[in-house]
Image: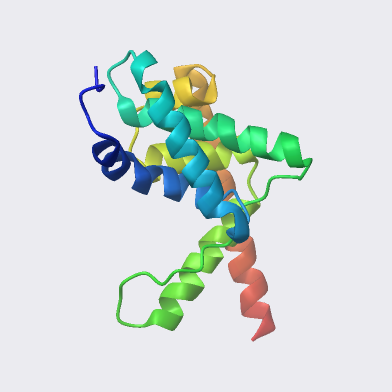
Amino acid sequence: MESHLSFDDIYEQLFPSVYRFVRVRIPGRDIEDVVAEIMAKIWRALPSFRGPNLKSWALRIAYNHVADYYRRSRRIPALIPLEDNLPGSDPCEETAAVLRIGEVLAGLPPKQTAVIQLRLVEGLSADDVAGILGITHEAVDSMLYRAKKGFRKIYRDLETAGGEQK
């Protein structure tokens, strides 16, 4: 379907989503290598792509590759805090907010974090997320509900703990 696209086209279309997906799951020193491996894997597998959504197919490859990365290295997956500033008027406040969100996400189970990222950040449908994670549409909806609930609780707990330290 998408085989008429060049590597540059595929790279431009998929790199931002793949990079965002990987950078919160892989240590900083390995991000570039892992993303490059995933992009090469996507390119090699492109002739076998059959489906309506190239992005969800590519993120499924990324999800599996990250799992393989941790299996090979026998490391425990953890979310890596985001360090880049968001555009805004106060970079210090923006950085603190991003770090806080990373800290909150690190407190959630990995699949709940993946559901939040894929549904809310990447904007994929519940069916696409289900395909990526290998679960049902209903499980995605349920997991997203629990993830949001857990996110709010962890965020409030961190805010309360932060307020006591002042």
